[in-house]
Image 1 (cartoon, rainbow, N blue to C red):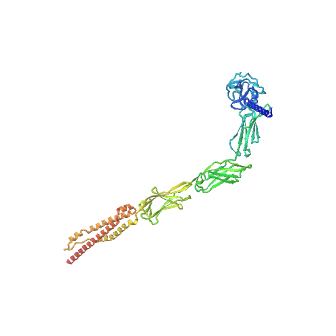
Image 2 (cartoon, rainbow, N blue to C red):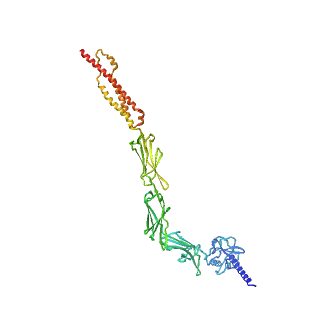
Image 3 (cartoon, rainbow, N blue to C red):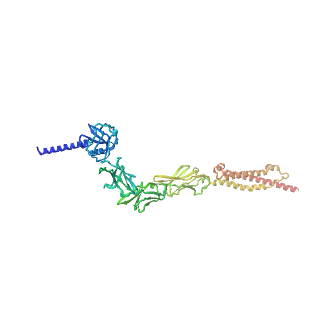
Amino acid sequence: MSSDTSSAIIRMLKLLLRLSIVRFLLTTSSPAAGFQIRLVGSGSTRCSGRVEIYHNDTWGTVCDDGWDLQDARVVCRQLNCGTAVSAPYGAHFGEGVGSIWLDDVACLGNETSLTACQHRTFGRHNCGHNEDAGVICSALLKPTIFMNPPGVVTWGQDIGITCLISVNRIGGRFLFTHTLSRIPKLNSTSNSSFATFNIAQVTFDNEGVYECQFQIQILGQYFKSLFSDHLNLTVSLPKPSIFMNPRGEVTWGQDVVITCAITTQHLGGTFILQTTSGSVRQWSSADSATFSIHQVNLDKEGLYQCQYQTRVSSRDVNSPLSDSVRLSVTVPLLQPTIDLISADGGLHWSPEAAEVTKGHSFVINCSISSQLPEGVFSLFFCGSNITDKPAVNHSASFEFPVAEYEHQGNYSCVYEVALSSRTFSGVTTSISVIVKLSLLLLVSPVAAGSLVLLLLVPVVICLVRKRRPQAMPPGVPQLAVRNHYEDPDDEVEQLYVNFEQVKGQLEQASGLVDAKIAVRIHYEDPEDEVEQLYENFEQVTYKKRQWEQASSVDEDHDDYEREEQ
């Protein structure tokens, strides 16, 4: 046989041997040939659960009659799970189904398999599945670890780390370790299923990874559980406090101060003021820092938070963010003012309105006292916007060169300013404008009429004082004279009547100077009235001359009578 053939055969035998070993490991967990054993049920692990045996191609349970820790110890050894910690009974891991293979098991504790212990023959029992037996082995019995309070711990805070195992029996010891070095931090003997490691006023030195392990001594030998999962302890600086002055809403252009403070022994760090638009840093050797915001505008609005950063034990540590404060900026617009002027004297102020003379010019001025940027003034007439003008030095003027009746009405100013894509506005009170006819046009006819009356007054007075006519001398045609001047007093009286009527009309016209519409209706043409007064004056003058002639006849008659005597 060649060497190559021998090598091939040897390799084949080794492969078959490995396959046989793998098959054996997959089909049995027990060193006893022909019988397999497993731990199953609710909450079971590879080394804890309900005990089941494979017999006659069927899995069956074990009855708990006489079941104790010695029996459980054989099962744990058979499964390479260390020693037994507990021997639960009464279907602790739930009830099985199917066959019950063993009952009245009585192990000495040194057997290599459960089936090697004393028991009834396979399948003989007086139990139900509510009496299924179980085991809890020391190996792979993994404790649970947790911290109170959970999460990030504040420097100086008191905490507790608890290690817990899920078995009812115990009387063992819990081992706490810190970081991966597994240096024991606490050995706690406990008669319960848990132990707590308390840390008072934690510091940054307490940070790291914590684990725990359960240990138990059985027959003078210590058995250890697996280590728990990792618990990360992170120590943080205290949360800073933040407050703003002034509080609440801030007026545009006002100065604001935001203060950050922290309570810690690690002073000499940096305060960071954070907002949505960025952050500002300020180093401080004290426990607080002040951030000043001068002349706030709408861009400074938003939420602000503080954070403290310092160096401890050669590493940088950060505090959590503080609570937030909101900076809200208001834009209070003062009410704009409105005024009216007339450069050529055509303005008169009454309690109700500004009276502008027709044909004169007038100007409406709008202004506002504000620290805001320049905006735009809009002039509203009777509720409608008629024109806009950019503000210059926070004011604007609207000119009307010639006042007309169509300019009568209510005027108001609206001021608008745009800040950060937002528009703010303020509205003035309204001012009323009345356009009236020129006062000279109304007074001139009245003055002319008054002058005529003054000329008539002396004439009337002379006529009143004139003596009455006497008897005519014989031979003089008195009848004719009397027929022509039947009663001169009647003429004078009629003249007084006309005088009083005209005087009353003129006084009425003078009283209606401000009521221009009524004056225009009543005196559509004042010159006609003056002309009428002149005609009356001519008639009176003519009658006066006739009366003087009649008086001359009377005097001749008197002379004649004296001569006759």
